[in-house]
Image 1 (tube, rainbow over the protein chains, first blue to last red):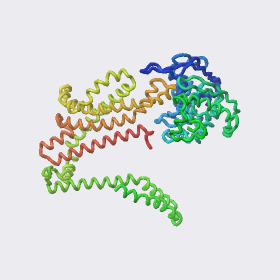
Image 2: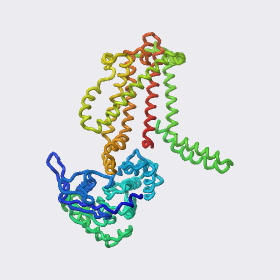
Image 3: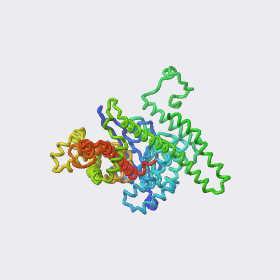
Image 4: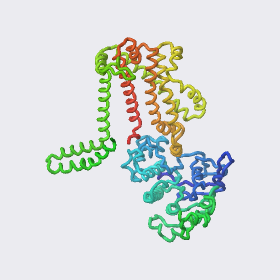
Length: 290
Length: 300
């Protein structure tokens, strides 16, 4: 705990003129092109976009798993060169080590740093306490629910006191109720630790509820279509999701994404074709109904 | 049959739950009631296991009875039971054998050969598999050779082994080694191939270096497959050992069985076979329990 609070609230992420392409047999495929994003220290930023738009690619480049074909990724002015504990990552598939107990999972990063056992045990207990998981410290991940697993995943990523926390659709596999609780927990931890967060999701409500700023990406090849500030006050309550302000933001983002989703799906679906399929649209577009 | 049992079992469950509840009020000693509840619960939870044990025992006894009858009436029906020893005769030779230091020596020698041959195979194949799984160049160099050698049954190595090694003992251990080597190697490689890349990435962004990833991710992740390899390897080790002992041995339980045939001691043939079976089973169980100790997370 102590290391985390001692650290200055840094974590300025800067992605400039970013492009990334893959080599395939048919030539190179652009996944992301001409993209600039930044995360200010202590800011919570989300990236939303249609599936396959390269938002995870972008996040993985910030994590250091992928090298950009063009452009730069820097954290506090230092170029990202491979993964490091200063950029903690949370994965959709939880990715806890099944052969380690909950506490050993949380201790992992501290162990890698060479911290002595008794010290890291204490640190892990404190963090697990924060997430309400002390009672499960000796359990193996297999025995935990999805929500608990992801809480451990977040705590594990935070244990080393990273400058930036990267989350790749972390709540995508959870049911709606658990997801809401997890969002609350994540917000609480973020406010307490004052750490920069880059959050990838396809859930618009989630992005608005959690973020200070939301980037909306275009369909492949992905680039930034829009940047939307979320002026909702903090701490945010569940009830805000019904406020007119929230709904207006939601509507705006929805229409931005819908355009891109339709592009990603290969164009508009013809009304006539829909009639043939006997699907009643009630005046909505297909994207709404789906 | 299973359908019948299931139908019976379903109404039983509520009875077992209800039983201890009325017992609590009239009986003055609450400990007894508690013990009853625990006993009832234990029976309920282990119902499947108890059932399997009971049926298993019945089936073993039935096997012995059939064997007994076939030999008693010297049945000849395609196969000839004329000279096959009866279970009682085998039991007789067993009681004699356990007091016979020569028989025990045969058993111990076989066990020692297994221990040496199998342990060497494990000590070479597991690290080799791990390194091959981790470093592409090592895999590219060794894999073709191992694929060519793998289909050769260990028994086919007997003449070559006799030429290669100065003593009989060494060639038998070598054949045992070869028998268990490939199953262990192949399963270790398989385990390494199945390591979840996301876990490797998770370890990387928690600050793990190459050595740590190997120790903390690749190795534990492969362990279940390594143990599968060890179990299979142990089985093949016994097959190879017995064959080698029958062909080129002077001692050992395989030699004992073959010798019994040459000396027309038919009961000893069956005794040797049963001893081999029991030893094989015991060594597999040993590996499985070591595996369970080594992988506490696999316990459900």
